[in-house]
Length: 257
Image 1 (cartoon, rainbow, N blue to C red):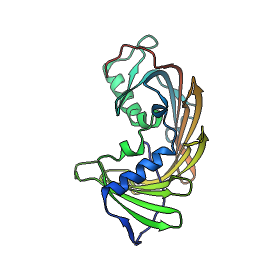
Image 2: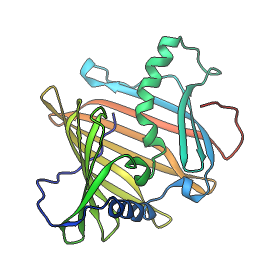
Image 3: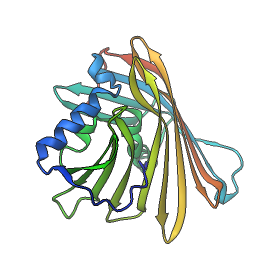
Image 4: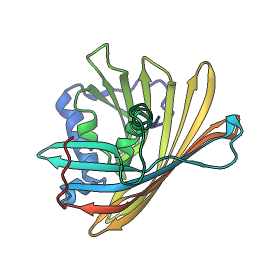
């Protein structure tokens, strides 16, 4: 599970504009200040995905290595398609095992290759309000009661043009998801370096820290490593580590998504 975060509190400030176009303008302006490989000419990639996990609650003191997968991304027009597939040349798995592992990895596809903010929130309707000096609060809500995530609150730093954090409200656990971000700059644009979140499951409070390491492959900055730690009462209870390498950039590969 990936969680994005921030403590916002109850906001009662004058509305800048209730028009959806105002929200889209703000999201597009934010996107101009974030680094996206697809906006720098990336058309498609494949990479080997190595990953391991440590479940401290079960007494595992060492990391358990999971089977390698292949990670694919392709951009067509304004659409991005992502998938993972077991590398049958390295390991053989049953259909049930493949389903088990791909179900976990599908939760991380947006971590390995993020959508733009405009793409991520394109189905949400929103309002923008002044939060503080150089701060704007965007509240985005879905019109579909069946959507898992019902609303986002995004805190925008208009001085540096990046998200300070966000709050998520959804109709399933985890609940009360809040968080914040630390950034690095690549080619003058923002990339998330660390994300922190707090959330509740079964009435128990947890925190999460996700760390990102990037590597320049040809002319693109891409994810090289991700480490995600889930903590309870100040102690790690679960840790994931991912590594992507052997990237193939804009080269042909036969793959049906």
